[in-house]
Image (cartoon, rainbow, N blue to C red; front, side, top):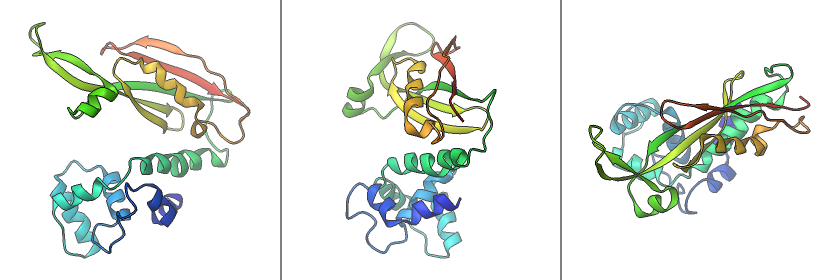
Length: 215
């Protein structure tokens, strides 16, 4: 928690994870820190209720849901990646006190299809797949989809990495994320992987791996 607080309140973190140098520079109700925390809450309530609750906690006058939406667009997604790497994964493995199986970490990967905004840029990046009405085989059109894959430490219940890929990629391709430095501990000199390929109901490739080193 302390690591998260230090990162979020730091000027360097804010400068690195905003879209422009002018974003979040004025003294406003929706600061960089507040917007980030509100997104992290992941509430299922309406945006206006989320904003009203946050403003009530702070004892300040509320703003509109539209103002909050505009503020979110000034925030880069990379802020959440760094928070996960340093405040979650780094904290978990930093002191060497984490669960293993015969000296190995058990790391699994799984993927799910997600519908993306239907824009030209998104279609170029992720591609599109055809869809029907669910009752017949007749194709009604195409939608942009992505394969959202998560790399997960099963024993310690920590998400190590996540990635959106083109829908036609295999779920096992997300295993490449294990090679990123957030999936290795400073004490490990190397790692070994055992890939397990399993069919799933959705037709995607499910998979897992055993990762270990000199822990």
